[in-house]
Image 1 (tube, helix red, strand yellow):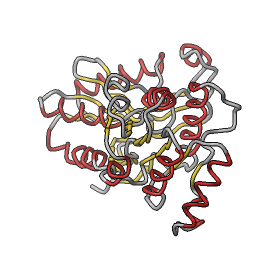
Image 2 (cartoon, one colour):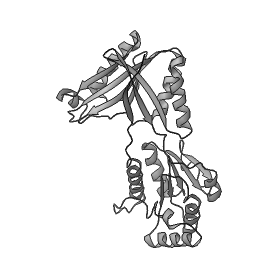
Image 3 (cartoon, one colour):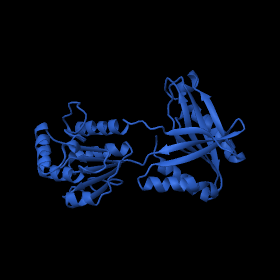
Image 4 (cartoon, one colour):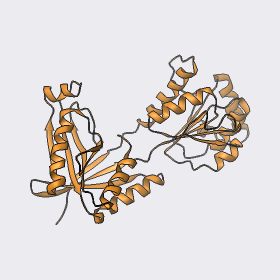
Length: 314
């Protein structure tokens, strides 16, 4: 699913500026489709769009229907079967069907759920957004469940970190790089939107909010720094902790941590040696193996992005 925050903020800005729009949300799919439930597109009052529900002639058809609703008001549940022609237009071999809830928004009074969702997501809390449409003269509600944007915390600002930070941005992570060397953790090596923080590694980690949407990659320049970084985060609520190093180095660090009082059970959640086993050699390949493991963990637990439909009592 594409980033939700920019789309939600766009909706709020447009409606507050007295410009009507339509939110188009895929609420159900069957078979092979270019986008799954939760994909969003906004059709503005000038017919321009923000976001995507898959492109091609299917998206164009939804866009036309949504633009009509923007002008006339109302809502609709649009059901489209992907035939050979529409699938080919997307460059894909799809033979499924999609249902798209199209809800128009024209008044600021409609925006309370959107403000609430934005506030939650900006605080790292999952959000739920109700989307109401009319279907066969009955008002129904779907609920879009949105996970907060994941944060990748990279400890160490070396060459692997540079490669990984770039990849993580493409994978829609917020990225922060920490190092105790100011000439490494700097904007010239990690340009915006990557955040860099130079300082004592443990102090910087203690200042960081770490929750279930946080992924931590430890790739410092040495055994000592890896040890203190892992010790600082081992009992955190991070969704992922990975540490670079040979099996021998990992064993030594784990042994030191256990001797200093860390429970062996906590160490089982650490991905070390880090990355998927793809025989990576170069810094770029190692970064790819780590990024692949982040994806694997992130997508391991499937959450129902769309709940409903529920009847809305009048």
